[in-house]
Image 1: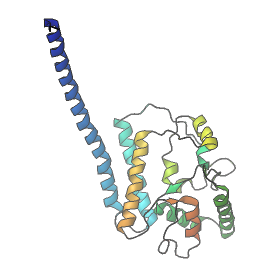
Image 2: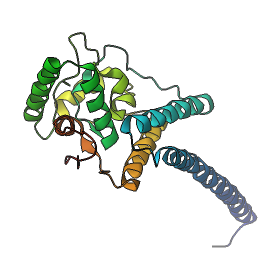
Image 3: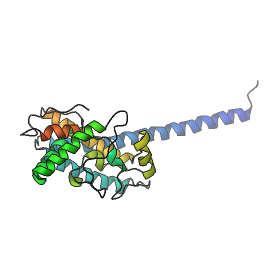
Image 4: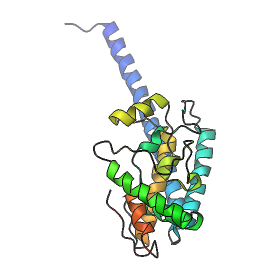
Length: 239
């Protein structure tokens, strides 16, 4: 079939259009790499600031400060208008299983030993032991032992990073997750910042020759509370 002038023009237009698409795709790839570099730079700064800080609470305070600053900066320059359903008193996520860096466990253990009476601490330990028994696969759901009768967190200022970054768009999804384990979507940037923070805490622990894997929060907390020196001899609890 003989090629017409119109065919040649259409082919030329397609080639020109494809070149423009390629140019835009390359620019987007460059921007994507620069965007990823933002998180790499954040992680590097976090690690540099805590690498040689052996006190878990001090390292955690620095990391949380970095998180707060990074969230504020990203919110200013990458605004996210997606809804967040999390409000004071909402507590469905407080039944989900929690994993965290070892520094979080040591920090919470130290906080409890300093602020809770021996009698109340023993009550908490009994509740934690029940929690370990109640949480069964596949969902491992159970109301957190640190949730009071008003659905408020008893260790809010020292709560794990997994609790801090939660940003559900719909409380009904959280409610449904309690029954069927479905994933709850989160704000991507917030989630990413906390992922970086968690990774850097683990990296700092490894740098110091300490246990550096993510651990189950309640089982690990029970182990650390049972140790006289908390941090120095604890080798971590499996997930």
